[in-house]
Image (cartoon, rainbow, N blue to C red; front, side, top):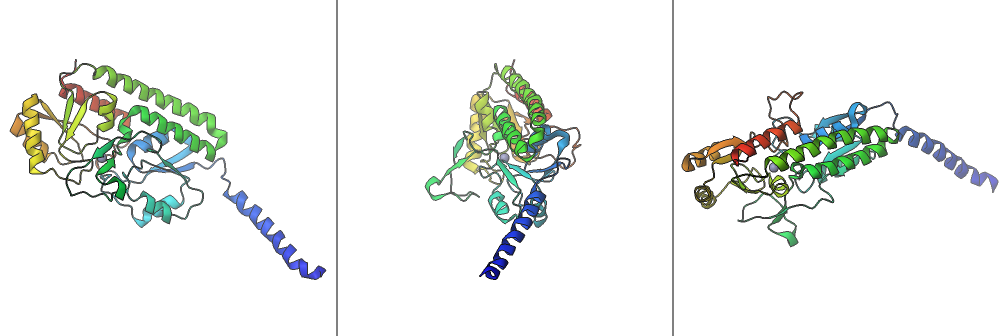
Length: 317
Ligand SMILES: [Zn+2]
């Protein structure tokens, strides 16, 4: 009887010893930088602002990539399999996210879906053609994913990054908190600049020669947007929509059409010529243009430039 129990006892001892070995190797070394992956440029800036010198932040989307159209390669899966934190927007901005997160073999990966818990703008999509797979119960109603263009939401996203990084590296929590507060004050200053800068404008509507990326900015600072495309730059306006927009511009005496750097401005130019309006750049800032000096351009800087465009285009005092 005694000898029968021996192999079981032996095995459980081995399991305990090996188990202890594995769990201690999973625990991260304090000195290794936290490896963070983000989907889009603003999230990279936020994560970098929080983690500072204690982590490496990498962008999944290369410069020049159009966020709505980009799809990951196998090498991106490899990058994610060695990361400790992944931050993405959600709300179908990255339709590939669910798949890649299912496929990645990385038990240590912590995931932040930035849009979760935020009140999102819903859009009724018209027409039959779209690139989205709607859940059956919500046909024609999609959520606007461009949440980073609400600076108050950005502060909430940053707080969540602090929370998750502090789980990964509890010792550095005070550093992450302090770093986050510094960046959040910059966002407060930006919010204040927008609030003051856009308080008194002749126009209250921005006409976009691109897609409807500025819904959150419009909601926060009390203006409205009309766009030639839908929520995604892939879609194209119908001739009917074009005529409506031209009529709208003429009726309201709108002097400026805004277009994005990444998106072809051809359409905007055509409408500008048709209506006599001028064109200005308004950059959603999700990704950087290909030939950009990455060290100098920041999300905050892009937003400051956008404010100048808006103030001029909407004729603000
Ligand atoms: Zn977009």
